[in-house]
Length: 381
Ligand code: COS
Image (cartoon, rainbow, N blue to C red; front, side, top):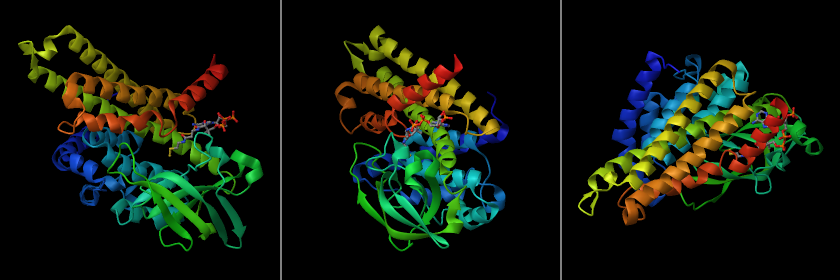
């Protein structure tokens, strides 16, 4: 795939921003488990919080290719920053762009584009993870409102976000045919943040519960059609799976690039460890996988930019499966190459490993990716 001049410039700008402004904070926000608000203010000034939002709604334009470029470059230095950015730009704003009415876009997007409001998305529940269509959060129609009751969990930006795309069941008997998407904002009566989670990785990206207790949501906040929110949800998942794959690519590159540099400097038995064939083989396998993920990601991102995400379940599952497993394996290999230094906080590879662990779980587990792929194979071959 050939990138446009604008996309190349975007990559250079974000790579520099990530090196100069994001990387220096990465260890500190990880250790203090702190959300980097100052970085989001800087990203807002650069127009990165409005990426994917058309200019008429205050955004900087662009689409899935641009989102993946930014995610890869941010994740190269700090996955936490990239994860919270992705929840805002991809999980929330991009889906409102795809499925909202012009009036809704005018109401919600300018605040997201400017960063006045931070976005997120709420789908998962304690009993509805992989089986997400079994969600129990209930939205009961009452005049011009839907009254929401239930608890969402594992929500990226939950504790710090202002505006969420929330899925609830409007017809519990109909499973996937009874789900509706709503915009719920901080300050709505009966809407609160529940528990904030302590996690293995992604320490700078807060994750928590969202609680709805008789929370009235105006009908004008329904995104898409009542009972047909599954379309919004599935296309959102496909887009998310590419953006998370871009995160995995950035992280897999980080493990590779740090390992190459370290193995040239680290001397044992009188020579650089990069000269040992067993280290060379590890680096070669890490690099080959990075190249494979890169090819797959950009060809699918280009296709999604042309055809939209709705019919890309198979392609996004294949990409996410390979990308997430690569990011985890590369992080494991990097810690092996760094030896004892890979296990302590002096070098970032210890963080890479913790940050990589969720990649084969979040945005759909590897097992669900395989289920989607194998079902599609049944239809295709
Ligand atoms: N994109 C488009 N269509 C999809 C799709 C996707 N990603 N996943 C499933 N579908 C379609 C199926 O093709 C099927 O269509 P038909 O009825 O026309 O055959 C329909 O949706 C129902 O799919 P399926 O029979 O597989 O339903 P299930 O309830 O078993 O599972 C989900 C569907 C979406 C729940 C499951 O595949 C999944 O992705 N689970 C993981 C959820 C997840 O990623 N959570 C993490 C969120 S992180 S924010």
